[in-house]
Image (cartoon, rainbow, N blue to C red):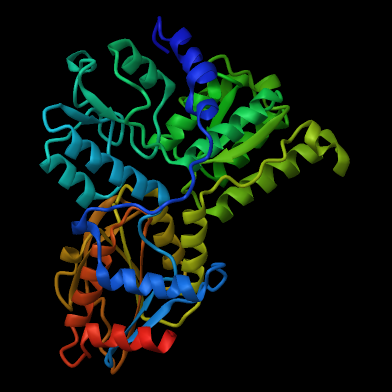
Length: 438
């Protein structure tokens, strides 16, 4: 932490910070720019919403075009936090034509949205990995700096405050991210160490870590394998020096594994796989119970009773994806930004069941024979040939992440159907499906 920033951080965390300052936002509808909307997809979503208001039916919507059948996930696309961030950003641009407007980093992990904001003159202060694109000392108190949906660190808050920039006028932090901060604060105040399940380089995880570490010792674990390695230190089987080397860059200043792992609580990056977080929670809890030989009524002496901190959209999208892959199909298409955490998890789920291709737009559907697919493991686009099987009727699963616009899904759906010359008209099939659901 930079010298001179500590007191400002503490001031905002405890006196003015969002986790204390604001209540949970009331759900509302948003005005999204038309280029991201799809009348076709909106119709489908509204029909499903009206027929399943309690959101208990995770079966996909099935559209039969004759030679191809497309199964569209029950839940997908822009979530509350994304819609709020997008609407706010465009409103700020509209209302402040004479001002310089900056985003701390990508508004959301979607290339179409970020590219359009850049075209409108918005500049990114940092890239998605935290590399500086605009020097802090070039910003002035007259500039507008938008905090993205992921939130940001208290260190960045302090820098903006020192410049004289209003920290809250243009803050679009998702309320479900704030919920995690609140939960981390609660268990930290009760003298638990916070363990954050998340990707250490992700903006949201870095923000959660920053907010938590001023309250209590904090540590990031990225997966179950790393949680298993952490257990050696919980059981005091490995040294502090080994811990510092193994978890370098993932623990708060002054972290003492000898005592700071005796009482822990787990929160998570809101876009992680729910099943992965649950596995980490159950594993660490079991290790602590065994090591301290705890009875059921003694567990909370060492392990905080934390509720799941995934956001509703992540839960819905993941549940809907399980419903999607329960259906028989030839392959799946998952759309979204390649650096989108929640989207990459949907890809992983689908790939466990069938061939699944990760694309950011319809342009990646080169032809009926070629697709440009993003390889999650190697982090590169690769060309796949023969992805559509030659058979009388092809079944395709289709979904996308929480930061993917409906317009992108419609474009992908229409392009897939166009690869089948004798397929039925998209509008007529959707209209017929809509009438059948009434």
